[in-house]
Length: 322
Image (cartoon, rainbow, N blue to C red):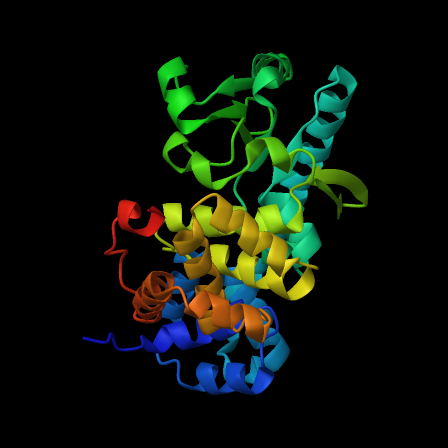
């Protein structure tokens, strides 16, 4: 049975688009009966700042003043977190540079500053830092020397499986996830971790250049990361749609890389989801190739219906990531 579209999700989907249509935002806002529920949904999907941005630009008069005040407060809180995390990222980038360790921030500030009109629009709670496997011990020691402590008691077996270690700063409260891979071991086959280091790109974070993933690698990573979490949140899809909309992506290179690593279903489904739910501007010829993968198309449609109905993730992560 096809799921019904949850009324509140219409507005969230419109605001999560890379280029929201003001008329569609106004129509969706006019249909909202429960603004408290709308804000709760937006917060759960990590897009309360995008909801504020969308309605404040398109139809502030359609939103009760008290609701607009609450949304503005969400936006300002997000702006504060963004500035705090971006500042700490630049401090850590300097620390790593002085130690001669190449570090690659991804997600968080790197995405917020390069893909969004304002970094405050992309909610974030921590920093994600990628280092080469050979640098992991030195990187961990460096963070500990800077006042960070592992969030959990260190277990090498878990670290080898999850390929990340969260550390928290005693002085700032910032959590930094130290990665030596972009995915846990059971998904690592989908990412060319050696090649990624040869294809890095530069983005500006708060006026300073930092290295991050190249556009094709970031697209693939976002699809795999979304599948790992069963696409339970719209903000990951918003990142992908904005990357597609704003970055120069070599689609032939991306699809060839995905097919070579046998992750076409997972990545094609993510791309189709961005196209069908958020109107991402994937070229028509590429969309045709994506839809020709029947398993990916079916998976994208299942997730699209579930998101529109705002239902909990029913598919298992295993189903989405095979």
